[in-house]
Length: 200
Ligand code: GAR
Image 1: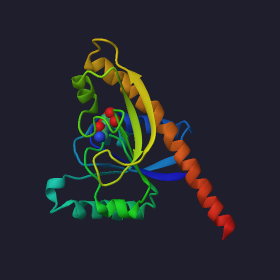
Image 2: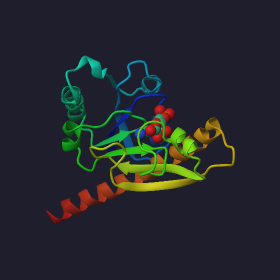
Image 3: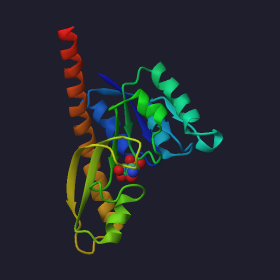
């Protein structure tokens, strides 16, 4: 089983999809910790209801990113967390966590990156009047939704489609795509570890 921590800032519907996938045995992983930068966020309620440990913080209580990420890193090390899974976490990841988890931080974004990065990828796509948008899963680097792309799924925008409808369809794609992609990443990671163990 891969040990992961999920980072979220809001509703946590993607967190819920990951909780459900692990519970059903579709994702061979455990969620050791849910980290949130918003103390009242609903994602924390979902985590608690599932019996998952939570760590909530407010960035303004710290001098800088290195300070609060240092605290998060200590907790992750204590729990032996192997992968950081961003699910609606609306902050850039800094060097403290990037250096500790090279190639082991994954994010989901509601657009076909590199188009419409950052906040409100869905609103940006509607504003631009595109006929096609989608969902991207990618590795995280220091930029805003810029790391290497792992998987994308396309969604056609219906003529005159409103935000509520598009958001619902994008979320549905996210909830099935994210567990599937993570399952494959974890499978490869375990195979590599096994390969290394056999050649040693
Ligand atoms: C999701 O649509 C996710 O792709 C997006 O935030 C939403 C969180 O929803 N992430 C980003 O925009 C990252 N730049 P949720 O809290 O219901 O999972």
